[in-house]
Amino acid sequence: DAMVIQNPRYQVTQFGKPVTLSCSQTLNHNVMYWYQQKSSQAPKLLFHYYDKDFNNEADTPDNFQSRRPNTSFCFLDIRSPGLGDAAMYLCATRRGMGETQYFGPGTRLLVL
Amino acid sequence: AQSVTQPDIHITVSEGASLELRCNYSYGATPYLFWYVQSPGQGLQLLLKYFSGDTLVQGIKGFEAEFKRSQSSFNLRKPSVHWSDAAEYFCAVVLLPTSGTYKYIFGTGTRLKVLA
Image (tube, rainbow over all chains, first blue to last red; front, side, top):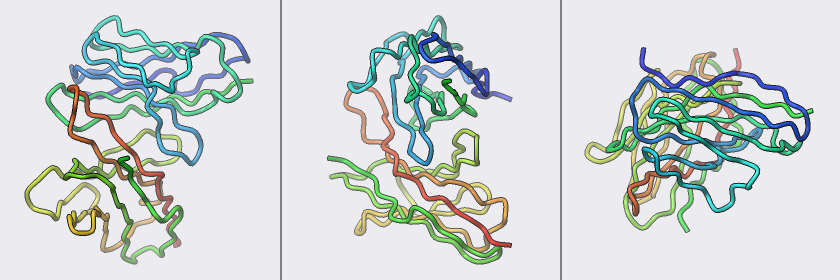
């Protein structure tokens, strides 16, 4: 089945130790999004790619970076995770001419 | 500024009872409207969406929603709740794109508890 896949589902890292979360999709969608979701809150958009064009939200910390080496994959890099970065990270995709976003299962990040 | 409001943070219903989750938006035109469900520790699953046409839309898992322009609302309903419906529900709107992007504005979510 076509889908959005996130690995790993759970990630534990240490304070200040760089971590990378990955997202892949078999939907061949142009657009990929990264969201941060803290407990009992709505998802917060960090950035998105339209094809290779990167779009950063104004309030996304510099600590968060992203890479999209090809259509299928997108990575979220947290250069120096702080305790406040512990959250669920959601990847979503959207077909270029469509309006609906399709979400992956998320990666829960724990920072020790 | 555009916003989405889900007035009920928590709702508890008995299994078999009817359900209505409220969503109101603030926007000058008709946005695209969505309802997503999120089970604990999971991603968001699309329940239904409204773009235009019939204001009563049917979704998966027996859910439906009605768009009311006059009330700027898009409330989610289910006639008979099942225990497996216990989850968090998010309403989202997408504003007409200004730069080719479709950004969601999410409500704060409603957590549904179902009593056996």
